[in-house]
Length: 239
Image (cartoon, rainbow, N blue to C red; front, side):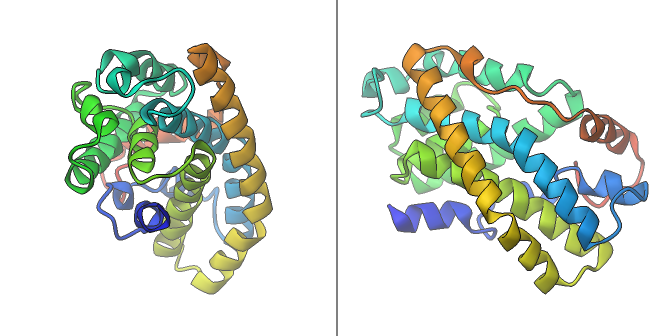
């Protein structure tokens, strides 16, 4: 189980995340994120909002994909209809078209990887029928296939959010990677707390089969920046 979880946490896995900055590029281009201190503030805010929402969706997908979780059976997770309202839950929590496209692009890339790594897993295979499922669903199902729990899936989601943005900031601003790593370490307690909250919310939502019980915190400025970034003619990252 640990080996599979570490595989999904490894940035070298071709999940499509390397092409996305998590909103960092748009802020850098407009002078709103300039140094390590700005990055620390940005990441803390993202963990509390987008991080909580994404982690809860990922944990919920993990629970749905795990045949021993709650009322879900292996037969249920093998059918795409069990996933459609969870995919819709991601959709309504992603109000900006550019971010919805980014989520589905990353989900499709990760799904291809998951299908090769766990070709017989029912939860992963069912997501194929959705076409281009959102990234949190694929990450949750893949983590379940790797043997992870919903709590571990939530922590993995926060890890991806922080790591992707931090890596993009290093590339775009030439920041000292050691100082950026120190920022990430300093945010670890907040990341752990957020992942725990997300897992608790996911447990309630899956038990009730009600995605409306999941968090829906929003971050208006990054959402606006995402649309502006999408309209830019020259960018290093897709989002």
